[in-house]
Length: 435
Image (tube, rainbow, N blue to C red):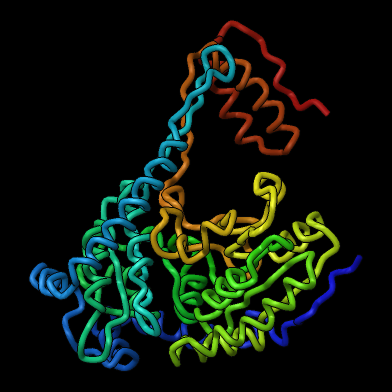
């Protein structure tokens, strides 16, 4: 049967994205020309902040002293989980070599980028977990220099817990600067930083656009839009848990889509009744975000069976995908398009967002169809190498010469010819193009 939308979104995540490209391009150009002074002007304009930009050891220690022992323990717990998972991920990237033909050996090396720039949001919410996710993975990858930047509060600075987390996880420098100016500072190597080779971390539409514009001169983790989440639930799911999980993700922002896909109408009806009640019980800022997200962007879809549910999920390619249904192994093997998967009621996106070990910097806006999220792999370059004996080079040179001439690339052919004539001067080779 066709998918039955009990609730259809009035908007998509990109409806209110707006055209910010011109604004961001101007800021980036101004800062590239004007350097530190230009960045400081934008920091004063947008963050209303005139304090020190690159935090000193004394400032880091003072901020850390303001973090409670309990919160430090929680940050350490989350950091340890993320670090150990990243270390396992890194272990899957090994240097290899293969004797392609006798005497010709080709290989692969995994080399970390030298300088990483980690953006840690700190405006609407203090994203302590983003500091953990981005800095820890860069450290495990082996980056030589890690810079972390975060928006300061007016005349106050970065939230102490963010400073503590970034320092604990291995940031070499912490910048009290947000928005486009923070991204620019890391990219252009301002305030004594090395120029970043890669920029990572979530941010608002201006940060995302800055990364989009800069991609090419630096690497980026991904181009991200508003966060989104989908739950697959059958008749055995707990409606209260499902509703709670939907609300937990809707609070991210007014344009954060949440979707429920089910094969049970009774469950769908119960969840649709519970969600507004749960939203109404949130603190004001969270409530305002969740109300708008649920009203304008949420969808509830009824499918015929689990195969149709899975197909629907793959079409949406959600950033976060939760399964609260029987036979979790079937879902794990069937589902293909998602940023991170949460199997069973006993786990939740909130765990992944904060402390369970997998990374919360994930692909949004259906980009999970072609990429995964931030991991230690994003900081690693897979490069290749080769070496050969003269005998090993012979068959490769012959094939290269003939293919090159067929393609019309005579210079390539002669590079192969030169080696054959040098290494085997007394032999005749048929190196003409063969069609």
